[in-house]
Length: 357
Image 1: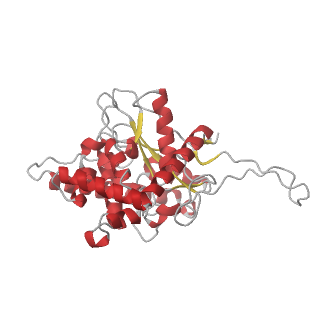
Image 2: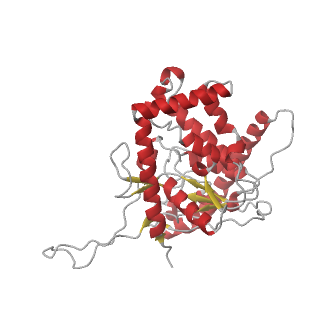
Image 3: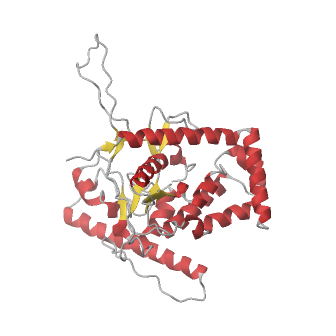
């Protein structure tokens, strides 16, 4: 049985959340809005005795701001890219595009209505809300803070979101939900979040679950072998010039035994790289300690005991919405049935590295 598309209640709430956020971002771009943000940040930074830039960077590195409230153990959601939607806000290329952020937030909202404290996203944590309220993706806000001359650039913004995303991943426990079909090599999900979750001993590879099934156009052998959660948490499918690439179309053409051997080798390579990276980060953070980072299994890494508090179950959906039937005109030469083709997913603004996921 095929998985169902994203439920209608999640779709409606996600679209509403996206449009509400778009309205707030529009205000942030205005003269009044951006100056208010700049004044607020200067006041907050001054109270801490820090420059604004240093103050924001410190926020992104502090685990306290993204740690779940006492007495809760929510399923942490991660996201990347999104999908075309006619009712979503337009992006900078005038495309109606719904970031997976809002689908993840809608899912978490519904889960928390059923059981408070069972799900969260980065943007709903204390630090995530604060960083989001700065609207650092807006060029007008960056200019109000001093612009490129003072180091307030889009690349700096992306690094801030990448850092807080990685910090958020270090505080996750148990199963996590990834709202993406796979991780694009240009995304924060691929470069910061998945490596951290993989080596986070409270999560581990077995607890990384994708909320969307592997792309339906992939051949069945590809979906079965490199469309698993563990494979999608380690491999990449969009850039043949980079490591750990698998071509979904040609994958089934290889000898089954040879491709499985190659796959195991890739998993081992990914794990070795990520473990080394985690060890180096730990040694920088705590140079006086010589505790070794625990080794992580390549394909079936087991995380420690699950949190005692209830967590939300990760959904498994198609990356699309229930198609809205469109009746053909009476004099159409086409078939006399309703068109129900779902919209094609799009990488949208984040494909160029201007988004957060």
